[in-house]
Length: 241
Image (tube, rainbow, N blue to C red):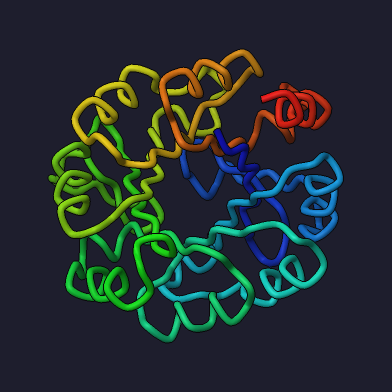
């Protein structure tokens, strides 16, 4: 299972939110490149970057940070936040990302999102299936849709999607553990989906449990920044798994 630390960016700084609420912003580092380098030094190969300014603005904003992380590390970056147009995607890929995540666009403009799958390939496009009470949330989690998460994923799996990041918003930033039961049902209902668990990771013990469930990856955010999970623990896990 891939270990994928998260860097969320507001105004060029590394921050974390609680349940996606912008007013809960906590700055952890003024320099996201320092954070990315620390991850790489711990043997981590992957990075999840979210442009929270972009999510609010509905277009990519912090691509200069992306360029710096991509040029100064060998991390394989997946990137989301405000990607709405072909131009946004070109900027992201030209900035050095390996994959992009589309969430709101997959709900609000499915034709565009489907065209990205066709144009760039399923290995480059991740479906963002972020939900609250199992209903898909959009626009930086500021809006809840009527779409239920499992049918939503199944629909896009039929259109070629392989990778899915699912964040249970009620768990995000709470350090109370991830939605094991939800992920189990997603995996049972969508065989062959490469599910990346996100939201609520609070202790190291949860990581092997997600691996045993056959999650393809896990995104870890606040637990790292609050030292609930150490980079040394992650380094050891990567080396021995």
